[in-house]
Image 1 (cartoon, rainbow, N blue to C red):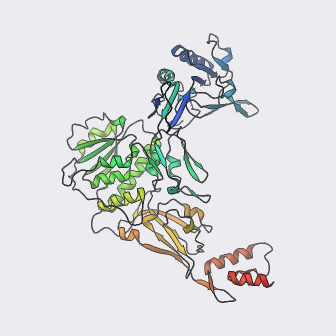
Image 2: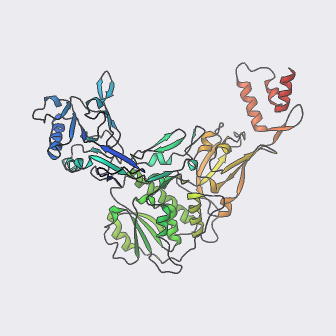
Image 3: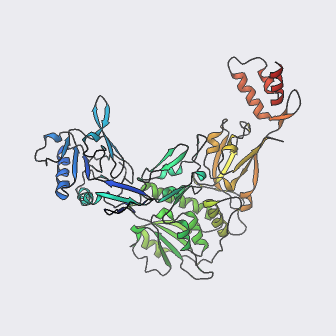
Length: 535
Protein backbone atom coordinates (compact mmCIF):
# COMPACT_ATOMS: atom_id res chain seq x y z
CA UNK A 1 0.00 0.00 0.00
CA UNK A 2 1.40 3.39 -0.99
CA UNK A 3 1.66 6.17 1.57
CA UNK A 4 -0.95 8.76 0.72
CA UNK A 5 -1.33 12.33 1.88
CA UNK A 6 -3.86 13.12 4.59
CA UNK A 7 -7.22 12.50 2.87
CA UNK A 8 -8.75 15.57 4.49
CA UNK A 9 -6.23 18.10 3.18
CA UNK A 10 -8.11 20.66 1.11
CA UNK A 11 -6.54 20.73 -2.37
CA UNK A 12 -4.29 23.62 -3.27
CA UNK A 13 -6.09 26.46 -5.01
CA UNK A 14 -9.59 24.90 -4.94
CA UNK A 15 -12.26 27.58 -4.40
CA UNK A 16 -16.04 27.51 -4.50
CA UNK A 17 -17.80 29.30 -7.37
CA UNK A 18 -20.72 31.19 -5.79
CA UNK A 19 -24.19 30.61 -7.19
CA UNK A 20 -24.99 32.98 -10.00
CA UNK A 21 -21.37 33.83 -10.71
CA UNK A 22 -19.81 32.92 -14.05
CA UNK A 23 -17.21 30.17 -14.03
CA UNK A 24 -13.61 31.34 -14.64
CA UNK A 25 -12.46 30.68 -18.20
CA UNK A 26 -9.02 29.49 -17.12
CA UNK A 27 -8.38 26.38 -15.04
CA UNK A 28 -10.52 23.36 -14.13
CA UNK A 29 -14.19 23.45 -13.07
CA UNK A 30 -15.62 20.71 -10.84
CA UNK A 31 -19.39 20.23 -10.47
CA UNK A 32 -20.26 18.02 -7.49
CA UNK A 33 -23.93 17.15 -6.98
CA UNK A 34 -23.46 15.28 -3.71
CA UNK A 35 -23.63 11.60 -4.70
CA UNK A 36 -21.25 9.61 -2.48
CA UNK A 37 -19.99 6.16 -3.42
CA UNK A 38 -19.01 4.06 -0.38
CA UNK A 39 -17.31 0.72 -0.92
CA UNK A 40 -15.49 -1.74 1.28
CA UNK A 41 -15.12 -5.42 2.11
CA UNK A 42 -17.23 -5.34 5.27
CA UNK A 43 -20.97 -4.66 5.06
CA UNK A 44 -21.19 -3.57 8.71
CA UNK A 45 -18.43 -0.99 8.37
CA UNK A 46 -19.87 0.29 5.08
CA UNK A 47 -23.36 0.59 6.58
CA UNK A 48 -22.00 2.45 9.61
CA UNK A 49 -20.14 4.87 7.33
CA UNK A 50 -23.32 5.48 5.32
CA UNK A 51 -25.32 6.25 8.47
CA UNK A 52 -22.69 8.67 9.71
CA UNK A 53 -22.43 10.44 6.35
CA UNK A 54 -26.18 11.07 6.27
CA UNK A 55 -26.31 12.03 9.92
CA UNK A 56 -23.72 14.71 9.18
CA UNK A 57 -25.20 15.81 5.84
CA UNK A 58 -28.74 14.52 5.12
CA UNK A 59 -28.77 16.20 1.71
CA UNK A 60 -26.05 13.89 0.39
CA UNK A 61 -27.09 10.83 -1.59
CA UNK A 62 -25.28 7.62 -0.76
CA UNK A 63 -24.64 4.46 -2.80
CA UNK A 64 -23.04 1.59 -0.87
CA UNK A 65 -21.18 -1.28 -2.56
CA UNK A 66 -20.31 -4.07 -0.12
CA UNK A 67 -20.81 -7.85 0.05
CA UNK A 68 -23.83 -8.60 2.26
CA UNK A 69 -25.03 -5.01 2.50
CA UNK A 70 -28.60 -6.06 1.59
CA UNK A 71 -28.80 -8.01 4.84
CA UNK A 72 -28.01 -5.01 7.02
CA UNK A 73 -31.03 -3.62 8.89
CA UNK A 74 -31.73 -0.07 10.01
CA UNK A 75 -30.16 1.69 7.04
CA UNK A 76 -31.88 4.88 5.86
CA UNK A 77 -34.25 4.19 2.96
CA UNK A 78 -32.45 6.77 0.84
CA UNK A 79 -29.30 4.61 0.73
CA UNK A 80 -28.85 2.68 -2.51
CA UNK A 81 -27.47 -0.78 -1.69
CA UNK A 82 -25.44 -2.95 -4.06
CA UNK A 83 -24.44 -6.38 -2.78
CA UNK A 84 -20.90 -6.47 -4.09
CA UNK A 85 -17.69 -4.42 -3.98
CA UNK A 86 -16.37 -1.86 -6.42
CA UNK A 87 -13.09 -3.13 -7.89
CA UNK A 88 -11.84 -0.01 -9.66
CA UNK A 89 -12.37 3.74 -9.53
CA UNK A 90 -11.10 6.57 -11.68
CA UNK A 91 -11.89 10.23 -12.18
CA UNK A 92 -12.12 13.25 -9.89
CA UNK A 93 -14.56 15.34 -7.88
CA UNK A 94 -17.93 15.35 -9.66
CA UNK A 95 -16.88 12.81 -12.29
CA UNK A 96 -15.90 9.47 -10.78
CA UNK A 97 -16.59 6.22 -12.63
CA UNK A 98 -16.42 2.78 -11.07
CA UNK A 99 -16.61 -0.85 -12.14
CA UNK A 100 -18.01 -3.86 -10.27
CA UNK A 101 -17.66 -7.62 -10.96
CA UNK A 102 -20.64 -9.33 -12.61
CA UNK A 103 -19.37 -12.93 -12.73
CA UNK A 104 -17.30 -14.91 -15.17
CA UNK A 105 -14.34 -12.63 -14.58
CA UNK A 106 -16.15 -9.72 -16.21
CA UNK A 107 -16.66 -6.19 -14.91
CA UNK A 108 -19.29 -3.64 -15.77
CA UNK A 109 -19.87 0.06 -15.19
CA UNK A 110 -21.27 0.61 -11.70
CA UNK A 111 -22.74 3.94 -12.81
CA UNK A 112 -26.16 2.39 -13.40
CA UNK A 113 -26.66 2.69 -9.63
CA UNK A 114 -25.78 6.39 -9.48
CA UNK A 115 -28.66 8.87 -9.06
CA UNK A 116 -26.80 11.24 -11.36
CA UNK A 117 -28.10 11.24 -14.96
CA UNK A 118 -24.56 10.95 -16.34
CA UNK A 119 -24.01 7.71 -14.33
CA UNK A 120 -21.08 9.22 -12.43
CA UNK A 121 -20.34 9.65 -8.74
CA UNK A 122 -19.25 12.92 -7.15
CA UNK A 123 -17.36 11.68 -4.09
CA UNK A 124 -15.77 8.35 -3.15
CA UNK A 125 -15.26 6.94 0.35
CA UNK A 126 -12.92 3.95 0.09
CA UNK A 127 -12.93 1.59 3.11
CA UNK A 128 -10.58 -1.04 1.67
CA UNK A 129 -7.30 -1.69 3.48
CA UNK A 130 -5.61 -1.46 0.09
CA UNK A 131 -6.97 1.67 -1.66
CA UNK A 132 -8.67 1.31 -5.03
CA UNK A 133 -6.49 4.18 -6.26
CA UNK A 134 -2.76 4.09 -5.54
CA UNK A 135 -1.75 7.67 -6.41
CA UNK A 136 0.35 9.22 -3.63
CA UNK A 137 -1.71 12.39 -4.14
CA UNK A 138 -5.25 11.07 -4.75
CA UNK A 139 -7.81 12.89 -6.91
CA UNK A 140 -9.89 15.62 -5.34
CA UNK A 141 -13.02 14.04 -3.88
CA UNK A 142 -11.49 10.59 -3.31
CA UNK A 143 -10.89 9.56 0.32
CA UNK A 144 -9.17 6.30 1.25
CA UNK A 145 -9.63 5.83 5.00
CA UNK A 146 -9.29 2.05 5.36
CA UNK A 147 -10.34 1.08 8.85
CA UNK A 148 -9.03 4.28 10.51
CA UNK A 149 -11.69 5.81 12.72
CA UNK A 150 -9.74 9.07 13.01
CA UNK A 151 -9.42 9.41 9.23
CA UNK A 152 -13.11 8.64 8.72
CA UNK A 153 -14.11 11.26 11.28
CA UNK A 154 -12.05 13.90 9.48
CA UNK A 155 -13.52 12.95 6.10
CA UNK A 156 -17.06 13.21 7.45
CA UNK A 157 -16.27 16.86 8.16
CA UNK A 158 -15.08 17.40 4.58
CA UNK A 159 -17.73 15.65 2.50
CA UNK A 160 -20.51 18.25 2.97
CA UNK A 161 -18.13 21.03 1.95
CA UNK A 162 -17.43 19.41 -1.42
CA UNK A 163 -20.87 19.89 -2.97
CA UNK A 164 -21.36 22.61 -5.56
CA UNK A 165 -19.19 24.19 -8.23
CA UNK A 166 -15.47 24.60 -7.66
CA UNK A 167 -12.60 26.16 -9.56
CA UNK A 168 -8.95 25.14 -9.52
CA UNK A 169 -6.38 27.27 -11.33
CA UNK A 170 -4.06 25.85 -13.94
CA UNK A 171 -0.75 25.43 -12.15
CA UNK A 172 1.43 24.45 -15.11
CA UNK A 173 2.41 25.52 -18.59
CA UNK A 174 3.45 23.04 -21.28
CA UNK A 175 5.39 23.89 -24.44
CA UNK A 176 5.37 20.86 -26.70
CA UNK A 177 8.09 22.29 -28.92
CA UNK A 178 10.56 22.04 -26.02
CA UNK A 179 9.53 18.53 -24.96
CA UNK A 180 11.93 15.64 -25.54
CA UNK A 181 9.48 12.89 -24.67
CA UNK A 182 8.80 11.61 -28.18
CA UNK A 183 9.83 12.47 -31.73
CA UNK A 184 8.58 10.62 -34.82
CA UNK A 185 7.18 7.80 -32.69
CA UNK A 186 10.45 7.28 -30.80
CA UNK A 187 10.28 7.67 -27.02
CA UNK A 188 13.03 9.49 -25.16
CA UNK A 189 12.70 11.46 -21.91
CA UNK A 190 10.17 10.15 -19.38
CA UNK A 191 11.28 12.10 -16.29
CA UNK A 192 7.98 13.91 -15.69
CA UNK A 193 5.96 10.72 -16.12
CA UNK A 194 7.92 8.97 -13.40
CA UNK A 195 7.69 11.67 -10.70
CA UNK A 196 4.06 12.85 -10.85
CA UNK A 197 2.61 11.97 -7.44
CA UNK A 198 -0.94 12.64 -8.68
CA UNK A 199 -0.55 10.44 -11.79
CA UNK A 200 -1.78 13.43 -13.78
CA UNK A 201 0.71 13.10 -16.65
CA UNK A 202 0.42 10.61 -19.49
CA UNK A 203 1.93 10.13 -22.92
CA UNK A 204 -0.42 11.19 -25.70
CA UNK A 205 0.00 11.54 -29.46
CA UNK A 206 3.75 11.99 -29.47
CA UNK A 207 3.87 14.36 -26.50
CA UNK A 208 2.83 14.39 -22.87
CA UNK A 209 -0.51 15.54 -21.54
CA UNK A 210 -1.24 16.93 -18.08
CA UNK A 211 -4.75 16.42 -16.74
CA UNK A 212 -5.68 19.77 -15.11
CA UNK A 213 -8.32 18.02 -12.98
CA UNK A 214 -5.79 15.63 -11.44
CA UNK A 215 -2.81 18.01 -11.21
CA UNK A 216 -2.45 19.37 -7.68
CA UNK A 217 0.65 21.50 -8.12
CA UNK A 218 3.36 19.32 -6.63
CA UNK A 219 5.71 20.82 -9.29
CA UNK A 220 7.87 17.68 -9.42
CA UNK A 221 7.49 17.63 -13.21
CA UNK A 222 8.89 21.16 -13.56
CA UNK A 223 11.78 20.28 -11.25
CA UNK A 224 12.94 17.31 -13.33
CA UNK A 225 12.09 18.62 -16.82
CA UNK A 226 15.49 19.34 -18.42
CA UNK A 227 14.29 21.72 -21.12
CA UNK A 228 11.64 23.84 -19.43
CA UNK A 229 8.83 22.29 -21.48
CA UNK A 230 6.89 21.99 -18.21
CA UNK A 231 6.94 25.03 -15.96
CA UNK A 232 5.05 26.13 -12.87
CA UNK A 233 2.76 29.10 -13.42
CA UNK A 234 2.22 29.87 -9.74
CA UNK A 235 4.75 30.88 -8.51
CA UNK A 236 6.75 31.77 -11.62
CA UNK A 237 10.52 31.30 -11.56
CA UNK A 238 11.07 34.97 -12.38
CA UNK A 239 8.96 35.98 -9.39
CA UNK A 240 10.98 33.73 -7.10
CA UNK A 241 14.30 34.92 -8.54
CA UNK A 242 13.39 38.55 -7.84
CA UNK A 243 13.38 37.73 -4.14
CA UNK A 244 17.04 36.73 -4.30
CA UNK A 245 18.41 39.95 -5.78
CA UNK A 246 20.37 42.07 -3.33
CA UNK A 247 22.45 45.19 -3.94
CA UNK A 248 26.10 44.57 -4.63
CA UNK A 249 28.12 44.51 -1.43
CA UNK A 250 25.13 44.12 0.87
CA UNK A 251 25.96 41.93 3.86
CA UNK A 252 22.76 39.90 3.75
CA UNK A 253 22.16 36.62 5.53
CA UNK A 254 24.27 33.48 5.42
CA UNK A 255 21.59 30.80 5.04
CA UNK A 256 18.57 30.83 2.74
CA UNK A 257 15.95 28.58 4.31
CA UNK A 258 13.34 27.57 1.72
CA UNK A 259 10.16 25.91 2.95
CA UNK A 260 6.51 25.41 2.02
CA UNK A 261 3.44 26.22 4.11
CA UNK A 262 3.99 23.10 6.22
CA UNK A 263 7.43 24.36 7.23
CA UNK A 264 6.25 27.86 8.08
CA UNK A 265 6.44 27.25 11.80
CA UNK A 266 9.70 25.33 11.72
CA UNK A 267 11.24 25.49 15.19
CA UNK A 268 13.96 27.99 16.04
CA UNK A 269 14.44 29.31 12.52
CA UNK A 270 13.57 32.93 13.22
CA UNK A 271 15.85 33.30 16.23
CA UNK A 272 18.92 32.89 14.06
CA UNK A 273 19.95 36.24 12.59
CA UNK A 274 21.93 34.51 9.88
CA UNK A 275 18.84 32.82 8.41
CA UNK A 276 16.64 34.35 5.73
CA UNK A 277 13.42 32.48 5.11
CA UNK A 278 11.52 32.09 1.86
CA UNK A 279 8.17 30.33 1.63
CA UNK A 280 7.52 28.62 -1.69
CA UNK A 281 4.35 26.66 -2.43
CA UNK A 282 5.01 24.16 -3.85
CA UNK A 283 8.59 23.66 -2.72
CA UNK A 284 9.91 22.06 -6.00
CA UNK A 285 9.00 25.28 -7.84
CA UNK A 286 12.21 26.63 -6.31
CA UNK A 287 14.46 24.55 -8.55
CA UNK A 288 18.18 24.02 -8.99
CA UNK A 289 18.82 27.13 -11.08
CA UNK A 290 17.42 29.23 -8.22
CA UNK A 291 19.51 27.38 -5.64
CA UNK A 292 22.62 28.28 -7.60
CA UNK A 293 21.43 31.81 -8.22
CA UNK A 294 20.98 32.26 -4.46
CA UNK A 295 24.60 31.23 -3.94
CA UNK A 296 25.69 33.62 -6.67
CA UNK A 297 23.77 36.43 -4.95
CA UNK A 298 25.78 35.98 -1.77
CA UNK A 299 24.12 33.28 0.31
CA UNK A 300 26.63 30.81 1.69
CA UNK A 301 24.07 28.00 1.86
CA UNK A 302 20.62 26.98 0.68
CA UNK A 303 18.59 24.65 2.85
CA UNK A 304 15.38 23.06 1.56
CA UNK A 305 13.00 22.05 4.35
CA UNK A 306 11.19 18.76 3.71
CA UNK A 307 7.87 18.50 5.56
CA UNK A 308 6.12 15.16 6.30
CA UNK A 309 3.17 15.70 3.87
CA UNK A 310 5.57 15.96 0.92
CA UNK A 311 4.81 12.96 -1.37
CA UNK A 312 7.56 10.35 -1.52
CA UNK A 313 8.02 10.78 -5.28
CA UNK A 314 8.46 14.54 -4.87
CA UNK A 315 10.84 14.06 -1.95
CA UNK A 316 12.93 11.61 -3.96
CA UNK A 317 13.03 13.98 -6.95
CA UNK A 318 14.24 16.86 -4.76
CA UNK A 319 16.92 14.77 -3.12
CA UNK A 320 18.12 13.41 -6.47
CA UNK A 321 18.36 16.94 -7.84
CA UNK A 322 20.27 18.06 -4.73
CA UNK A 323 22.74 15.19 -5.20
CA UNK A 324 23.25 16.25 -8.80
CA UNK A 325 23.87 19.90 -7.89
CA UNK A 326 26.22 18.99 -5.04
CA UNK A 327 28.36 16.96 -7.46
CA UNK A 328 28.53 19.94 -9.82
CA UNK A 329 29.41 22.35 -7.00
CA UNK A 330 32.31 20.12 -5.98
CA UNK A 331 33.51 20.03 -9.57
CA UNK A 332 33.55 23.81 -9.98
CA UNK A 333 35.47 24.38 -6.77
CA UNK A 334 32.56 25.22 -4.47
CA UNK A 335 31.47 23.61 -1.22
CA UNK A 336 29.01 20.82 -2.08
CA UNK A 337 27.41 21.26 1.36
CA UNK A 338 26.18 24.68 0.23
CA UNK A 339 22.97 22.99 -0.93
CA UNK A 340 21.15 20.42 1.18
CA UNK A 341 17.75 19.21 2.33
CA UNK A 342 16.63 19.23 5.95
CA UNK A 343 13.79 17.44 7.68
CA UNK A 344 11.68 19.70 9.88
CA UNK A 345 12.51 17.60 12.93
CA UNK A 346 16.25 18.17 12.33
CA UNK A 347 16.04 21.84 11.45
CA UNK A 348 16.96 23.49 14.75
CA UNK A 349 19.96 21.24 15.39
CA UNK A 350 21.19 21.61 11.82
CA UNK A 351 21.10 25.41 11.99
CA UNK A 352 22.95 25.40 15.30
CA UNK A 353 25.67 23.21 13.78
CA UNK A 354 26.06 25.44 10.74
CA UNK A 355 29.48 27.10 10.75
CA UNK A 356 29.37 28.93 7.44
CA UNK A 357 31.59 31.76 6.21
CA UNK A 358 29.86 34.78 4.72
CA UNK A 359 29.93 34.57 0.94
CA UNK A 360 30.81 37.35 -1.47
CA UNK A 361 28.53 38.46 -4.28
CA UNK A 362 29.20 36.79 -7.62
CA UNK A 363 27.73 38.68 -10.60
CA UNK A 364 25.54 36.41 -12.71
CA UNK A 365 26.15 36.03 -16.41
CA UNK A 366 23.42 37.00 -18.83
CA UNK A 367 23.30 33.95 -21.03
CA UNK A 368 25.03 30.90 -22.42
CA UNK A 369 26.23 30.33 -25.96
CA UNK A 370 23.84 28.31 -28.11
CA UNK A 371 21.53 27.39 -25.24
CA UNK A 372 18.05 28.73 -24.50
CA UNK A 373 15.43 28.74 -21.77
CA UNK A 374 15.76 26.83 -18.50
CA UNK A 375 19.08 25.26 -19.43
CA UNK A 376 20.62 28.62 -20.29
CA UNK A 377 19.80 29.95 -16.83
CA UNK A 378 21.16 26.84 -15.16
CA UNK A 379 24.46 26.89 -17.05
CA UNK A 380 24.81 30.63 -16.51
CA UNK A 381 24.39 30.17 -12.75
CA UNK A 382 26.95 27.34 -12.71
CA UNK A 383 29.49 29.34 -14.68
CA UNK A 384 28.97 32.38 -12.45
CA UNK A 385 29.88 30.29 -9.40
CA UNK A 386 32.80 28.43 -10.95
CA UNK A 387 36.25 29.09 -9.50
CA UNK A 388 39.22 29.82 -11.70
CA UNK A 389 41.54 27.02 -12.79
CA UNK A 390 38.75 24.48 -13.08
CA UNK A 391 39.51 20.79 -13.19
CA UNK A 392 39.77 19.45 -16.71
CA UNK A 393 38.25 16.03 -16.20
CA UNK A 394 34.49 15.51 -16.31
CA UNK A 395 32.41 14.85 -13.20
CA UNK A 396 30.32 11.71 -12.93
CA UNK A 397 26.69 12.57 -12.18
CA UNK A 398 23.78 10.47 -10.89
CA UNK A 399 21.59 8.73 -13.45
CA UNK A 400 18.82 10.89 -14.90
CA UNK A 401 20.93 14.05 -14.59
CA UNK A 402 20.30 16.35 -17.58
CA UNK A 403 24.00 16.69 -18.41
CA UNK A 404 26.22 14.18 -20.14
CA UNK A 405 27.74 12.89 -23.31
CA UNK A 406 26.81 10.61 -26.16
CA UNK A 407 29.27 7.92 -27.18
CA UNK A 408 29.19 5.87 -30.37
CA UNK A 409 30.44 2.35 -31.04
CA UNK A 410 32.42 2.86 -34.23
CA UNK A 411 32.18 -0.84 -35.09
CA UNK A 412 28.40 -0.68 -35.28
CA UNK A 413 27.70 2.89 -36.40
CA UNK A 414 26.87 3.28 -40.10
CA UNK A 415 26.54 7.08 -39.90
CA UNK A 416 22.96 6.91 -41.08
CA UNK A 417 22.42 10.10 -39.01
CA UNK A 418 19.10 8.92 -37.58
CA UNK A 419 20.35 10.16 -34.21
CA UNK A 420 21.19 13.64 -35.51
CA UNK A 421 17.88 13.92 -37.33
CA UNK A 422 15.87 13.11 -34.19
CA UNK A 423 17.90 15.09 -31.62
CA UNK A 424 15.53 17.87 -30.41
CA UNK A 425 18.25 20.06 -28.86
CA UNK A 426 20.65 19.80 -31.79
CA UNK A 427 23.36 18.42 -29.55
CA UNK A 428 24.02 15.96 -32.38
CA UNK A 429 24.63 17.01 -35.94
CA UNK A 430 26.17 15.44 -38.99
CA UNK A 431 26.85 15.38 -42.69
CA UNK A 432 27.11 12.91 -45.52
CA UNK A 433 29.36 14.89 -47.85
CA UNK A 434 32.16 15.57 -48.44
CA UNK A 435 32.84 12.93 -45.76
CA UNK A 436 30.29 11.32 -43.44
CA UNK A 437 30.65 12.40 -39.83
CA UNK A 438 28.69 12.79 -36.61
CA UNK A 439 29.39 15.74 -34.30
CA UNK A 440 28.37 16.40 -30.69
CA UNK A 441 28.08 19.52 -28.52
CA UNK A 442 27.84 18.51 -24.87
CA UNK A 443 26.37 21.74 -23.50
CA UNK A 444 23.20 21.09 -25.51
CA UNK A 445 22.67 17.45 -24.47
CA UNK A 446 19.96 16.82 -21.86
CA UNK A 447 20.34 13.02 -21.91
CA UNK A 448 16.79 12.49 -23.17
CA UNK A 449 17.75 9.18 -24.79
CA UNK A 450 16.01 9.80 -28.12
CA UNK A 451 19.22 9.23 -30.06
CA UNK A 452 19.84 5.92 -28.34
CA UNK A 453 16.26 4.78 -28.94
CA UNK A 454 16.33 5.81 -32.61
CA UNK A 455 19.67 4.19 -33.51
CA UNK A 456 18.94 1.16 -35.74
CA UNK A 457 22.36 -0.33 -34.95
CA UNK A 458 22.13 0.14 -31.16
CA UNK A 459 25.49 1.87 -31.38
CA UNK A 460 24.77 4.75 -28.97
CA UNK A 461 25.21 4.93 -25.23
CA UNK A 462 24.74 7.80 -22.76
CA UNK A 463 26.89 8.85 -19.83
CA UNK A 464 25.61 11.30 -17.22
CA UNK A 465 28.43 13.70 -16.41
CA UNK A 466 29.32 17.39 -16.24
CA UNK A 467 32.24 19.22 -17.85
CA UNK A 468 33.19 22.15 -15.57
CA UNK A 469 35.14 24.10 -18.18
CA UNK A 470 32.66 26.07 -20.35
CA UNK A 471 34.93 26.11 -23.41
CA UNK A 472 35.24 22.32 -23.38
CA UNK A 473 31.53 21.94 -22.76
CA UNK A 474 30.72 24.17 -25.74
CA UNK A 475 33.16 22.70 -28.23
CA UNK A 476 31.83 20.68 -31.16
CA UNK A 477 33.53 17.28 -31.26
CA UNK A 478 33.45 14.71 -34.02
CA UNK A 479 32.46 11.42 -32.39
CA UNK A 480 32.17 9.26 -35.53
CA UNK A 481 33.48 9.57 -39.05
CA UNK A 482 33.72 7.57 -42.26
CA UNK A 483 34.94 7.85 -45.84
CA UNK A 484 32.80 8.10 -48.92
CA UNK A 485 32.75 5.31 -51.49
CA UNK A 486 32.70 6.14 -55.18
CA UNK A 487 30.08 4.80 -57.57
CA UNK A 488 31.39 1.67 -59.28
CA UNK A 489 30.26 3.04 -62.66
CA UNK A 490 30.79 6.82 -62.74
CA UNK A 491 33.28 7.13 -59.85
CA UNK A 492 31.20 9.81 -58.09
CA UNK A 493 31.51 9.61 -54.26
CA UNK A 494 27.99 9.10 -52.91
CA UNK A 495 27.79 6.91 -49.78
CA UNK A 496 29.67 6.14 -46.58
CA UNK A 497 31.65 2.94 -46.51
CA UNK A 498 30.12 1.62 -43.27
CA UNK A 499 26.60 2.35 -44.45
CA UNK A 500 27.20 0.63 -47.79
CA UNK A 501 28.76 -2.43 -46.20
CA UNK A 502 25.91 -2.72 -43.72
CA UNK A 503 23.34 -2.40 -46.52
CA UNK A 504 25.05 -5.12 -48.58
CA UNK A 505 25.12 -7.49 -45.60
CA UNK A 506 21.44 -6.92 -44.94
CA UNK A 507 20.60 -7.44 -48.61
CA UNK A 508 22.59 -10.69 -48.81
CA UNK A 509 20.97 -11.98 -45.62
CA UNK A 510 17.46 -11.64 -47.04
CA UNK A 511 15.94 -14.83 -48.44
CA UNK A 512 15.57 -14.74 -52.21
CA UNK A 513 18.07 -11.91 -52.75
CA UNK A 514 18.48 -11.32 -56.49
CA UNK A 515 21.84 -11.94 -58.15
CA UNK A 516 23.70 -8.69 -58.63
CA UNK A 517 21.84 -6.92 -55.82
CA UNK A 518 25.10 -5.99 -54.10
CA UNK A 519 26.48 -4.57 -57.36
CA UNK A 520 23.30 -2.49 -57.72
CA UNK A 521 23.87 -0.95 -54.25
CA UNK A 522 27.37 0.12 -55.32
CA UNK A 523 25.84 2.39 -57.96
CA UNK A 524 25.01 6.01 -57.19
CA UNK A 525 21.33 7.04 -57.50
CA UNK A 526 21.87 8.56 -60.97
CA UNK A 527 23.46 5.43 -62.37
CA UNK A 528 20.75 3.26 -60.81
CA UNK A 529 18.10 5.35 -62.49
CA UNK A 530 19.84 5.21 -65.85
CA UNK A 531 20.29 1.46 -65.54
CA UNK A 532 16.63 0.95 -64.70
CA UNK A 533 15.53 3.14 -67.59
CA UNK A 534 17.75 1.29 -70.07
CA UNK A 535 16.38 -2.03 -68.87
